[in-house]
Amino acid sequence: MPSPIPVERFLPRDLSPSIDLRPCSSPLELSRSKPGALVPAAFSRRLAVPRLPPRLAWCSIDWEQVRVLEPLGSGGFGSVYRATYQGQTVALKKVKRCSKNRLASRQSFWAELNAACLRHPHVVRILAASACCPGDPGSPGTIIMEYAGSSTLHQLIYGRGPALEKSCCVRYARHIADGLSFLHRGGVVHLDLKPANVLLAPGDLCKIGDFGCSQRLRDAENGEDPCCTQLRHLGGTYTHRAPELLRGEPVTVKADIYSYAVTVWQMVTRELPYTGDRQCVLYAVVAYDLRPEIGQVFSSTEAGKALRAIVQSCWVPRPEDRPSADHILHSLDCSTSSVLLGEDSPQGPSLEHSTYT
Image 1 (cartoon, rainbow, N blue to C red):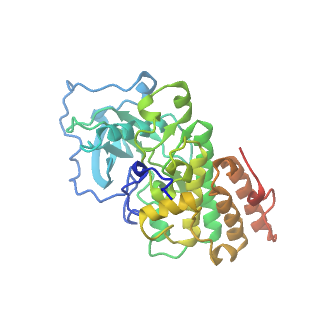
Image 2 (tube, rainbow, N blue to C red):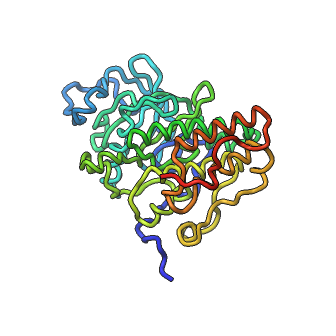
Image 3 (spheres, one colour):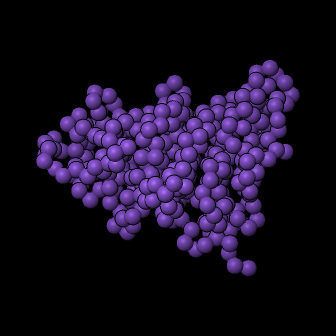
């Protein structure tokens, strides 16, 4: 039987990024660049700087206010640095030139700007951007974001510390669902949700970052910004990619819900989603509904049982049968109340037997 997955959909990705690294637009490798190497001390004001579209003019970078401090990490489409901008600590991302796929590199930059106007406590905020990079005229652009710390959910899950308490998993799951709900209401689909792209900010807050694979659904419908919304470059991480995307079907917000399920599963189990050959895994996910194993760890507490119901409802094969982020939030709120009250089962509607549109 021929594979239901188009060959061009296979992603040359590692199974999971290193626990020691900062999220970027792909699995990361530590950058060995010298601090301060990104922005020269004397940057010519006469440099011809490509302009952002008018709707993004508010976030243009004032280069005289930029000071790079140290590299944080790098990946296939960018390098991230800790820096200061207008007197505050920020994260600065330089999008790399990609000689093998220049279009993909350019799309990654513009996709990052899908989050440019978003303000939410569980979404990394973009402060400024420029369609150039001093010292690297071939770079598609530079992005300055809030500095949400250097720790990721991936590092926390797979580090040497103890496993996350189920109550902590519920809290983090709520933070991520809250961020997704906000994004989806604004017509933005992240398309690369995974623990490595969730930052742990001060105050024990989860923040969704790295929008290099994202799309704006409303722009696609209205024919705006075609380089951002057309699925020419299919990025992301195959272990978290929804089966309908592996089949080449249109993008919807429910693709993020599938990725959310795998992310929550990782928090609870502290395991990697799959082992074995990538193409075999992709085939099994699409053709045989392969999913990570739901083990006894989900049954040890009431919070674990509540998370099990959410995970199983979020990674069902048909996207229209998955709950929305708002429904997940409602279920988590009810589950949290149930756990605090010491009840035997979560309150509210069961996600396992519901269908959402």
